[in-house]
Image 1 (cartoon, each protein chain N blue to C red):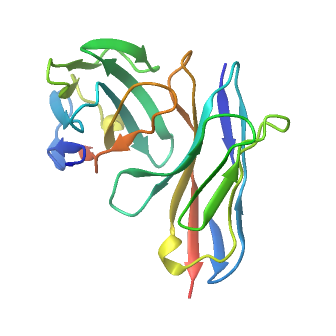
Image 2: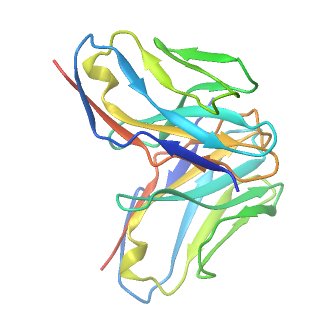
Image 3: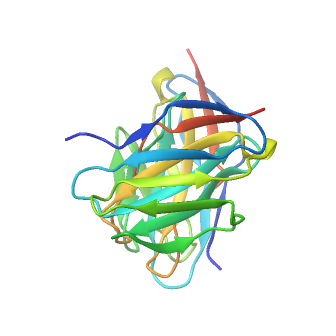
Length: 111
Length: 113
Protein backbone atom coordinates (compact mmCIF):
# COMPACT_ATOMS: atom_id res chain seq x y z
CA UNK A 1 0.00 0.00 0.00
CA UNK A 2 0.90 3.66 -0.11
CA UNK A 3 3.16 5.09 2.57
CA UNK A 4 5.15 8.19 3.50
CA UNK A 5 8.43 8.14 5.40
CA UNK A 6 9.59 11.35 6.93
CA UNK A 7 12.77 12.44 8.63
CA UNK A 8 12.69 11.97 12.40
CA UNK A 9 12.79 15.05 14.55
CA UNK A 10 13.20 17.19 16.41
CA UNK A 11 15.39 19.34 14.21
CA UNK A 12 17.04 22.35 15.85
CA UNK A 13 18.76 25.00 13.74
CA UNK A 14 20.09 28.50 14.19
CA UNK A 15 18.39 31.39 12.45
CA UNK A 16 19.49 31.83 8.81
CA UNK A 17 20.63 28.19 8.54
CA UNK A 18 19.75 26.01 5.56
CA UNK A 19 16.92 23.55 6.11
CA UNK A 20 16.22 20.16 4.57
CA UNK A 21 13.51 17.82 5.80
CA UNK A 22 13.53 14.52 3.94
CA UNK A 23 10.40 12.81 2.71
CA UNK A 24 10.13 9.66 0.62
CA UNK A 25 7.02 7.84 -0.47
CA UNK A 26 5.72 4.56 -1.80
CA UNK A 27 2.70 4.73 -4.05
CA UNK A 28 1.00 3.14 -7.00
CA UNK A 29 -0.11 5.44 -9.75
CA UNK A 30 0.59 9.15 -9.72
CA UNK A 31 -0.17 10.71 -6.36
CA UNK A 32 -0.21 14.38 -5.48
CA UNK A 33 2.32 15.38 -2.83
CA UNK A 34 1.95 18.00 -0.13
CA UNK A 35 3.75 19.63 2.73
CA UNK A 36 1.62 20.87 5.60
CA UNK A 37 2.74 22.93 8.59
CA UNK A 38 1.24 23.00 12.07
CA UNK A 39 1.92 25.93 14.38
CA UNK A 40 1.34 25.49 18.12
CA UNK A 41 -2.33 25.29 19.05
CA UNK A 42 -3.53 25.27 15.46
CA UNK A 43 -4.65 22.87 12.78
CA UNK A 44 -2.51 22.06 9.76
CA UNK A 45 -2.04 24.54 6.94
CA UNK A 46 -0.99 23.76 3.40
CA UNK A 47 2.57 24.94 2.81
CA UNK A 48 3.09 23.76 -0.77
CA UNK A 49 2.11 21.05 -3.20
CA UNK A 50 3.14 19.30 -6.41
CA UNK A 51 0.77 17.27 -8.53
CA UNK A 52 3.06 15.62 -11.08
CA UNK A 53 6.64 14.50 -11.55
CA UNK A 54 9.27 17.27 -11.74
CA UNK A 55 6.83 19.88 -10.43
CA UNK A 56 8.31 22.24 -7.88
CA UNK A 57 6.07 23.59 -5.17
CA UNK A 58 7.10 26.79 -3.39
CA UNK A 59 5.74 29.12 -0.74
CA UNK A 60 7.16 31.46 1.93
CA UNK A 61 10.72 30.63 0.84
CA UNK A 62 10.16 26.87 1.13
CA UNK A 63 10.55 24.60 -1.90
CA UNK A 64 10.06 20.92 -2.70
CA UNK A 65 10.45 19.06 -5.99
CA UNK A 66 8.42 15.98 -6.91
CA UNK A 67 11.07 13.43 -7.88
CA UNK A 68 9.53 10.27 -9.26
CA UNK A 69 12.87 8.56 -9.93
CA UNK A 70 13.84 8.74 -6.25
CA UNK A 71 10.24 8.81 -4.92
CA UNK A 72 11.10 11.85 -2.85
CA UNK A 73 9.66 15.24 -1.98
CA UNK A 74 12.24 16.86 0.29
CA UNK A 75 11.42 20.24 1.85
CA UNK A 76 14.11 22.94 1.68
CA UNK A 77 14.55 26.54 2.74
CA UNK A 78 17.68 28.58 2.26
CA UNK A 79 17.49 30.73 5.40
CA UNK A 80 15.16 29.80 8.25
CA UNK A 81 13.59 32.23 10.71
CA UNK A 82 12.40 31.82 14.28
CA UNK A 83 8.83 32.07 12.96
CA UNK A 84 9.38 28.85 10.97
CA UNK A 85 9.37 26.85 14.21
CA UNK A 86 6.52 24.36 13.80
CA UNK A 87 5.76 20.74 12.96
CA UNK A 88 6.01 19.84 9.27
CA UNK A 89 4.07 16.97 7.67
CA UNK A 90 4.68 15.39 4.30
CA UNK A 91 1.59 13.82 2.71
CA UNK A 92 0.42 12.04 -0.40
CA UNK A 93 -3.01 11.65 -1.90
CA UNK A 94 -4.19 9.59 -4.82
CA UNK A 95 -7.65 8.86 -6.10
CA UNK A 96 -7.15 5.22 -5.12
CA UNK A 97 -6.42 5.87 -1.47
CA UNK A 98 -7.10 8.14 1.42
CA UNK A 99 -4.55 10.83 2.19
CA UNK A 100 -1.52 9.52 4.04
CA UNK A 101 0.62 11.69 6.30
CA UNK A 102 4.16 11.21 7.45
CA UNK A 103 4.89 11.17 11.15
CA UNK A 104 5.75 14.86 11.27
CA UNK A 105 9.05 16.64 11.93
CA UNK A 106 9.27 19.19 14.73
CA UNK A 107 11.49 22.13 13.77
CA UNK A 108 12.89 24.58 16.32
CA UNK A 109 14.84 27.65 15.25
CA UNK A 110 17.18 29.36 17.73
CA UNK A 111 17.56 33.15 17.47
CA UNK B 1 -14.20 33.33 2.92
CA UNK B 2 -14.68 31.64 6.28
CA UNK B 3 -12.37 28.78 7.15
CA UNK B 4 -13.16 25.38 8.59
CA UNK B 5 -14.88 25.68 11.95
CA UNK B 6 -14.77 22.96 14.59
CA UNK B 7 -16.81 22.97 17.76
CA UNK B 8 -16.33 22.68 20.61
CA UNK B 9 -12.68 23.62 20.99
CA UNK B 10 -12.23 21.62 24.20
CA UNK B 11 -14.11 18.71 25.74
CA UNK B 12 -13.67 16.75 28.93
CA UNK B 13 -15.54 13.45 29.23
CA UNK B 14 -15.37 10.39 31.44
CA UNK B 15 -14.83 6.81 30.36
CA UNK B 16 -17.92 5.12 28.96
CA UNK B 17 -19.58 8.33 27.84
CA UNK B 18 -20.12 9.30 24.24
CA UNK B 19 -19.23 12.52 22.45
CA UNK B 20 -20.18 14.33 19.26
CA UNK B 21 -17.84 16.73 17.48
CA UNK B 22 -18.94 19.12 14.78
CA UNK B 23 -17.23 20.48 11.68
CA UNK B 24 -18.40 23.17 9.27
CA UNK B 25 -16.41 23.10 6.02
CA UNK B 26 -15.46 25.94 3.74
CA UNK B 27 -18.39 26.95 1.59
CA UNK B 28 -18.46 24.93 -1.64
CA UNK B 29 -16.31 22.08 -0.32
CA UNK B 30 -18.02 18.71 -0.61
CA UNK B 31 -15.41 16.57 1.09
CA UNK B 32 -14.90 16.47 4.85
CA UNK B 33 -12.34 14.22 6.49
CA UNK B 34 -11.48 13.56 10.12
CA UNK B 35 -8.15 12.83 11.79
CA UNK B 36 -6.95 11.86 15.23
CA UNK B 37 -3.69 13.41 16.37
CA UNK B 38 -1.77 12.07 19.37
CA UNK B 39 1.88 12.43 20.41
CA UNK B 40 2.44 8.69 20.11
CA UNK B 41 0.58 7.81 16.92
CA UNK B 42 0.88 11.04 14.99
CA UNK B 43 -1.84 12.02 12.57
CA UNK B 44 -4.20 9.18 11.73
CA UNK B 45 -7.00 9.23 9.21
CA UNK B 46 -10.44 8.34 10.57
CA UNK B 47 -12.81 8.71 7.62
CA UNK B 48 -13.83 10.91 4.73
CA UNK B 49 -17.29 11.94 3.61
CA UNK B 50 -18.14 13.24 0.17
CA UNK B 51 -21.64 14.38 -0.73
CA UNK B 52 -23.10 12.71 2.37
CA UNK B 53 -21.48 9.32 1.64
CA UNK B 54 -18.53 7.79 3.44
CA UNK B 55 -15.88 7.44 0.76
CA UNK B 56 -12.87 6.25 2.73
CA UNK B 57 -12.33 4.82 6.16
CA UNK B 58 -9.26 4.37 8.33
CA UNK B 59 -8.45 1.59 10.76
CA UNK B 60 -10.46 2.64 13.77
CA UNK B 61 -13.02 0.58 15.73
CA UNK B 62 -16.72 0.91 15.11
CA UNK B 63 -17.06 3.16 18.17
CA UNK B 64 -15.91 5.93 15.85
CA UNK B 65 -18.58 6.98 13.41
CA UNK B 66 -19.51 10.01 11.40
CA UNK B 67 -21.99 11.52 9.08
CA UNK B 68 -22.33 14.38 6.66
CA UNK B 69 -25.38 16.51 6.10
CA UNK B 70 -26.74 17.95 2.86
CA UNK B 71 -25.05 21.30 3.60
CA UNK B 72 -21.70 19.42 3.87
CA UNK B 73 -21.44 19.98 7.61
CA UNK B 74 -20.15 16.88 9.34
CA UNK B 75 -20.29 15.32 12.77
CA UNK B 76 -18.11 12.68 14.34
CA UNK B 77 -19.33 10.52 17.18
CA UNK B 78 -17.30 8.42 19.57
CA UNK B 79 -19.21 6.03 21.82
CA UNK B 80 -18.07 4.23 24.96
CA UNK B 81 -15.08 6.49 25.41
CA UNK B 82 -11.76 5.05 26.52
CA UNK B 83 -8.78 6.83 28.06
CA UNK B 84 -6.84 6.22 24.85
CA UNK B 85 -9.34 8.32 22.89
CA UNK B 86 -7.85 11.45 24.42
CA UNK B 87 -6.48 13.36 21.44
CA UNK B 88 -6.77 16.36 19.19
CA UNK B 89 -9.43 15.65 16.56
CA UNK B 90 -8.95 17.56 13.34
CA UNK B 91 -11.42 18.07 10.57
CA UNK B 92 -10.47 19.11 7.04
CA UNK B 93 -12.47 20.08 3.99
CA UNK B 94 -11.56 20.08 0.32
CA UNK B 95 -12.98 19.93 -3.18
CA UNK B 96 -12.43 16.18 -2.92
CA UNK B 97 -10.05 15.46 -5.80
CA UNK B 98 -6.39 14.39 -5.41
CA UNK B 99 -5.00 17.75 -6.51
CA UNK B 100 -6.99 19.77 -4.02
CA UNK B 101 -5.35 20.60 -0.71
CA UNK B 102 -7.00 20.02 2.62
CA UNK B 103 -8.11 22.99 4.69
CA UNK B 104 -7.99 22.16 8.39
CA UNK B 105 -9.87 23.49 11.36
CA UNK B 106 -8.09 24.21 14.64
CA UNK B 107 -9.34 20.97 16.13
CA UNK B 108 -11.25 19.75 19.15
CA UNK B 109 -9.13 18.73 22.13
CA UNK B 110 -10.83 15.75 23.79
CA UNK B 111 -9.73 14.63 27.22
CA UNK B 112 -11.14 11.40 28.64
CA UNK B 113 -10.78 10.89 32.39
